[in-house]
Image (cartoon, rainbow, N blue to C red; front, side):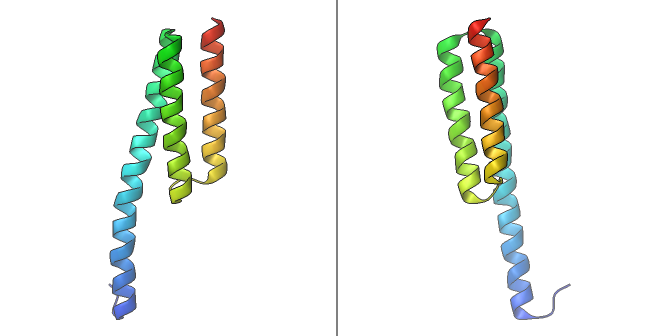
Length: 89
């Protein structure tokens, strides 16, 4: 256990950030999964709307530092590719 005042503060901050990041990551995963499900269902308008929401969530996660920016870009790109493939099918 930490003994210094600064180390105790750092522990408190890490706990707060951990819960915040965990919550953000979960909501990002949910948004991406929802977009993939809608894209697979074939509803084009809903798929585009869900894709926008998922990309927005990814961008927010990247700007907050929860996700690495290149990870967010990669996930957005793959999601876009899936939505585009669903449009053609």
